[in-house]
Length: 240
Image (tube, rainbow, N blue to C red):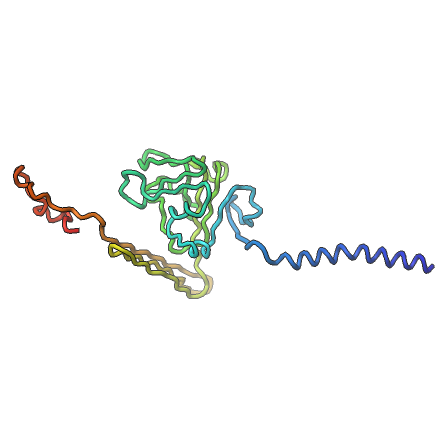
């Protein structure tokens, strides 16, 4: 009887040991990589559980890296090239997006881009205006590889999904001011304004202004060609 009791006690200790070790492992797993919730597959998931090559950046990560628009993501996302202002477009709002070497550099209205840009699930069909300013976003997801099954056409290179901040139940004011050379002034702000219980609103705005960095000098001998001087055209902006 004594031998049997000792064997049963030893067996119980052996069974309880792995359970105790598992509890210790679970208690020590609270640290590590921060959990980021994404909607890359049209449902809420942890980014570590999504079987897609994806680069997700939270609002805090974008602020730490000084990312103010979509084109700035090119500096922090591998295999991603985003050019603000394609050649001869004349506007920084035009986005030339390439993911894994697949994209489009033409900003014409009849050209479909090779990388899709989505703002809160709404597809931006043309590269003109696709370089969105990011005054207050919750996260940005860069999905690499063809995404036609989940997102649709024109995503053979990949997709860029921008998710904006949802209005909160409490008043919140956030903004920043940037200055620089050539009289640069950039003001961005967003505010959460609760209206009633269960009804909230959010207001965001951005203002950017900068003088030109090219000065037009009137040609001194222009009058000998019977042409009016540049100073005759007051709307030409020759003084800037």
